[in-house]
Amino acid sequence: MPDETAPRSSSGPDAETLGALRDELDAVDRALLESAARRRTIVRRLAAAKMDAGGTQPLFDRTRERVVYERAEAAAGELGLPPTLARALMGVIVEDSHQVQETLIVEAASRTPLDAVARPRLLIVGGGGRMGRRLRDALRERGHTVDTLELGDGRDRVAAVADADIVVIAVPMTDAEPVTRELGPHVRPDALLCDINSLKVGVCRAMEESCRGEAMGLHPMFGPGVWSLRRQKVVVCPLREGPRAAWLRKELASMGVELIDTDPVTHDRMMAIVQVLVHFSTLVMGDALRRTGVSVEDSLRFTSPIYRLELAFVGRLFTQDPDLYAEIEMSNPQAAEMRRCFRNAADELDRIIADADHAAFRRRFEDIAVYFESFGDEAMRLSEQIIDTLVRQP
Image 1 (cartoon, rainbow, N blue to C red):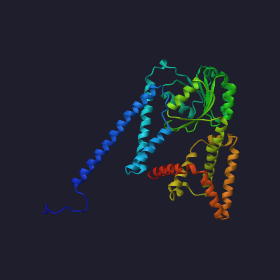
Image 2 (cartoon, rainbow, N blue to C red):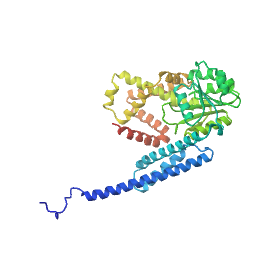
Image 3 (cartoon, rainbow, N blue to C red):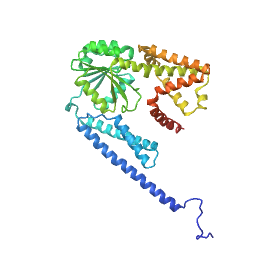
Image 4 (tube, one colour):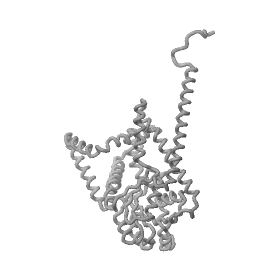
């Protein structure tokens, strides 16, 4: 019979101690959830205050969000916690806050009788396309009347355009300018004509010249597959704005969209960089990998997290519509300049490496590092977060 007076083994805590510690953890977990619930209550009051103010405050404020994260990281440091833990916790909480506000705004819109407020009738030309459908569904979810018009559906296009308060041109890039010139004259003087084309100079000129009413260019910087418009960017090229444009700006902001104003020339220059140059690089990388003769599966067996991440972005492009990327690469008038920059950079770096010129390589590396200097800290933080998420995947 064992001696119950003998001292317990020092190999680990007894069941009573473990139970007490777990009870403490359960109490802390409960307190965390209670704090989250209290925060949700404040968020609901904040959403109500925004709606009482006429919805002039945007759902998403990038500056405010950065302050929230910075304060959380600073508080974590004072409490002896890693900043990454604070950012991860706040990320979940902030996302929930946006979801709560968005849900309340949509519910309030659905309860408001359509004839009680001035709601514009929207027409999306090309509303059957993927991006047209995405915008249509997002607007209908908020209780708006949205009609769609396809170029070959046999409808009276003139009558449909004349009946709309806001007309959105959402046709393929090659059709955007001629369709705008065809339909623009039939937009009422008190209505708004806009587009979602990824080039702006030509279509904005067509809107200004053919339309008597309000006009502005829009470019959603996201694809139709996004699950929410929150935090998504839309570039705005103001042309002739009035009440309809103001309403659309306000509605997009209340959906969590970040609006970026610029002129058509600057827009197209920026798209030559962020679309033409970046996609060209991805296209070349994909073809170069194909030419090696090594399968993607074989290369992934030896992958590092960074290679897997880069390969994911390359592979993602080749799951999509080739005609879209052909339009992006071939339609921008500054595309040739971007390809020339790419080729020159590749050729010069190739010569430096072929010559085993370490000094020249170091100088080139340092020059590029200076160019990225202001973005360096954010680049490290963003990439580390993505890589951390990636390595957790099975």
